[in-house]
Amino acid sequence: MAQKKGSLLRYLFLFLVIEVVLIVLSSGLNKQLQVGYDDTGKFVFQNVEKEYDLQDKIQEEFQPDEYAKQNGISPKFYGSSALYDFFAKIFGKANAISAFNLIRMLIIVDLVLLLVAFLIKKQLFEKPSKPQIIFEMIYTTFEDFVKDTLGKEKLHFTPYIVTLFIFIWTCNMIGLVPIPGFMEPTRNLNVPLGLGIMAVAVVHYMSIKTKGLGKYLKDFTQPLPPMTPINIVGEFSKVISISFRLFGNILGGAIIVLVVSSLVKFIILPVGLNLFFGIFVGTIQAFVFTMLALTYIGVEIAE
Amino acid sequence: MEQIARAAALLGAGICMGMGALGPGLGEGFVAGKACEGLARSPENASLITRTMLVGQAVSESTGIYSLVIALLLIFST
Image 1 (cartoon, rainbow over the protein chains, first blue to last red):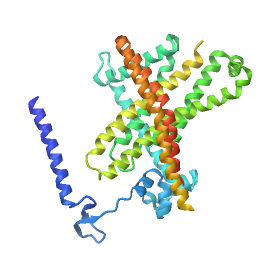
Image 2 (image 1 turned 45 degrees about the vertical axis):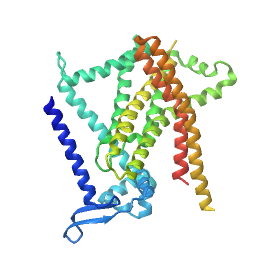
Image 3 (image 1 turned 90 degrees about the horizontal axis):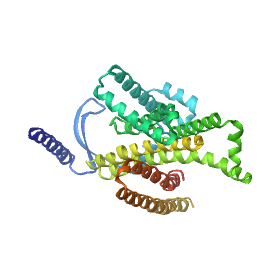
Image 4 (image 1 turned 90 degrees about the vertical axis):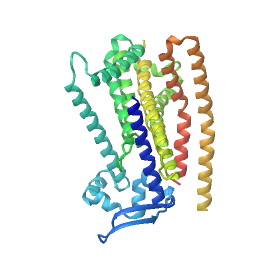
């Protein structure tokens, strides 16, 4: 045990030494060390004065289309204009790059989920293996929530609820992977809005199915007939509130991480910020979205 | 004129965020305090109380999130 602790400390010390050496080599915080080959093929080792413009950085990260238009780099996006033209034809020129980023990230999240599902499926035994225990624990926890909220005979909602949680959680976590261009898909309003509309559609479908169409329509006029418009607006505000909550939390966290990292020149502090805004807030918001969808279903179905 | 509008938008974003953060801060603190009281009274219901507290805090947080969205719109789209 002591041996392990010592080696961990040694790694931390090594990391600190490397950071300090990098800072000293770049001689000052607003210069950046460049090691590599320049345009003419010559090996270079130089300090470059680098101007950090926060406004530009935020715009490049959060409004890529606007940034590309202002700097005139749009047709050569990712080295191929055919891809850009394809996306511009479907989504319009104003949204091409952000649509491409969003769809790429969604496909990556789906692939990760599929991969995990297949790997887990190989390890299902009578005597549970370690990953099986983790996933069964997640499933059982949410099954208990569904049992508490909807009752024992409505347990067939559990797969939907667990899928919602795992998808949103993976979406929030994928932004932590340090690969250029990776972002949380939930940072774009379209993803939470789609999930929210789906949740409310499930609520209304189950409401019609359990109550019958006549009682469903009659419930809109409760408690008095003049209240009907307010009830209808209330249904829309459900979608707005559930989706904007997820979107605002993730986007706000991402902006704060970017701004503070840019202020401290990306030294050490962003790790703690990512711990809080990425892992803690991401998990809490995924949980809250799931619980609210469950509560909406419970309110409509309750006798 | 352009610069006056920009300055007004930035000032408005600051005021919007400050006022919008007041309510959720008070509300979430109140919810957490009440949850502590509940936990002290009946520690066996810990998981139920924690879950209800988190959902209640998230709901009372939504006005703060709306003001954050409006502040971002003011900053980046004017």
